[in-house]
Image 1 (tube, rainbow, N blue to C red):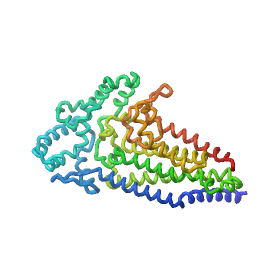
Image 2 (cartoon, one colour):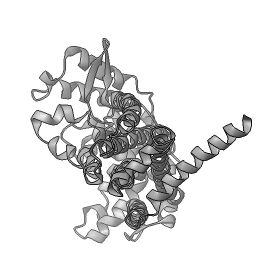
Image 3 (cartoon, one colour):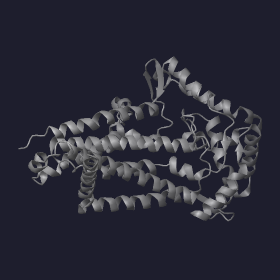
Image 4 (tube, one colour):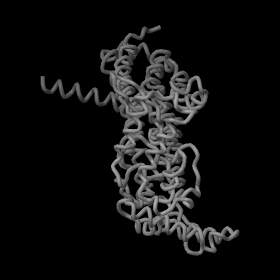
Length: 423
């Protein structure tokens, strides 16, 4: 009896490996994996090159040595951004702005001035954002901020939100309850903010490269798994498959398992390698800094760190990948067509961003699965939803929503394929 159980498990395991081997042995699928590897390498290089250091002569560089030099510059301001630090940055910025290099019309001289300011460049931008209008960024706003205003740095962030919510263009877009919720999120941010060099995390999370890589990974994964269920019909082997003793049971589960494993392994290996390469070159430090210390997320309602942002974004991307590829397999099983199945990931990832630009569809598009692939770019999104008497941000709604949908679609895939009629 025990031997029979072991034998049965081994048989199921071999069926699973066989399904995976069928997918990976196709020449087109091998080419798709090579394309993904190339995209991963190119994306990593472009992300790393986004971080630049300017030396005293005004020359710009990128790479490991540049990241090391920039880290030394920025970590001079490592610590909590207290009133004294804000005051110091305002004073130092004024000195740099008044220097002959900054006043010069020569670009190289201007670069020398930028080199003097790059150590406090992040804090400078935070001051611009705090004292400026939320929808009207002013690069030179800090030049009109006095040192005496340094103490109101964090209060100005909240005041800016209130002004935005009460502006004529926005005031009717939110209820009073929603406005109060947003203001409370701003007020609950733990201040003073902790700051240190975090350009590795910012390059990883604040850029468009990670969402783009996730999207390409989903498209390629969808291409790989789209034939798992339809190939039996294309090869005219469906009558043999469904007539076999395990054809309508464990054989189907082995196909589902193959699709799940391919999606999981391919997604996490790609995302992990991308993150590791970028952080290994640019530095792992700064993961405990709040996302609000980055220009892209100063207005974020999500009070999380960069490391938490990474966990949230990659987990969301994984849920999105599972849902989209499972839906592609379901279409493959139902229509018996690999071509139709391949279109599913494309429609769900590439079409919504364009449709979302139309005002009539903008709201509903915030709940489409493509949003799961760009959570790190949606942290400043003010889309709110009322559920069970509570208010929730879009990011906290969409992940559990599609996790539930995946758990519903996955068993449906089994039932649909099991009931397939042999023609």
